[in-house]
Length: 170
Image 1 (tube, one colour):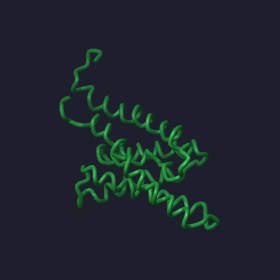
Image 2: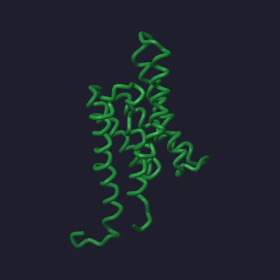
Image 3: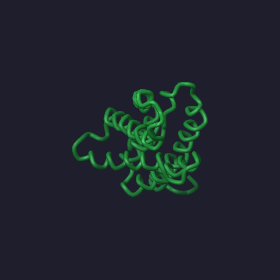
């Protein structure tokens, strides 16, 4: 590519594809389409699944920076300077780094479970921020529904990242 060998382009090219291209694509789909679904359980944060893959594939400083920047973007476009998205994404990276010694963090099952846990934590934090004015049962049911729905669609979100960052020759 432009006189540069494939071995020199591949690592940065893959990083840029994931960081700017795919992340922006998932973020736009999440904010434009998913947030307008009529069912509350289907209004999930797709970037949590991307965070799980980034936490497992990039070194800690890069994954922390990635999650902080995309969390900041998510919070700013919702009218908050720093808040729920940023904290959720950084918590997912922390939990991934904490558990990587005890579990097979490269398995899809682990990633799906971590996505579900991240969505539950995000829902509980949102309920704590909103306060006791809302019906607790409805909030819990919505959070559980969002966690289950997130776990069902997370392999579709994580799959392209695994494919782009795979070391196998295509």
